[in-house]
Length: 264
Image (cartoon, rainbow, N blue to C red; front, top):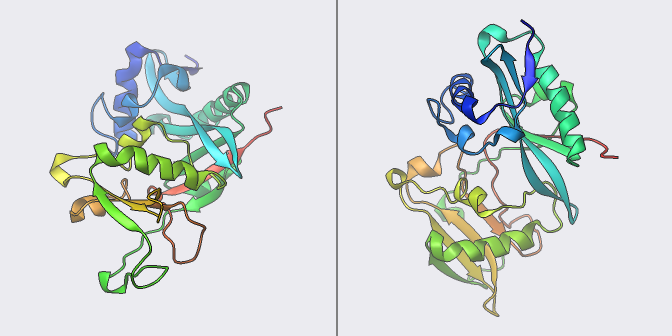
């Protein structure tokens, strides 16, 4: 029976959960319900079926990213995986080719993904645009970039009180930069502001300028397990003009690769 490429149906979502749980080694959760099934819609997927069995998966989550002051529709590629017994049959290449055509029709001129091995995706036209950076700094070496006393007033808030202020700073920060995503509330709450009682509360420190307007923020926790969690790197952003000593937003684990295509 030939392999069929089509979107997964709602009734088949349990298969998507089980496949991605296996191929990602439980990184997104075990079982039929996991992070991928919770953040994916059937119409975003292109999957390979051997009869009624899901054997390879692929989804394209619609995002908007910044590109030198312009909002650009982007396809966020996720859930790419194939069952071991169906690998080396060209299924991912077939799926990717079809998915790129779908993105083109939707006006998504750029495709991007976090890759554990970025070199694999160069064969599909991707190139690396960013990599993960981790910094460990002793508190004895931390100082204000504009002098010993600093020039801002900082207030410490919980997620409910600090979310709108952090988002305001983030929107201003990404305006003229490259590859930063427009973030809806669910994206904030499932990434930088993802709270877990077992790992401790999240705090938001908001910096205000002399006029009282927010001009920077830091999202942090006080527990080592949370701080060192690879998929939830701490995030710091500043609205001020860039300088070598100013903090920048941290990126998620892995290497980010991007592929662009002419939408015309």
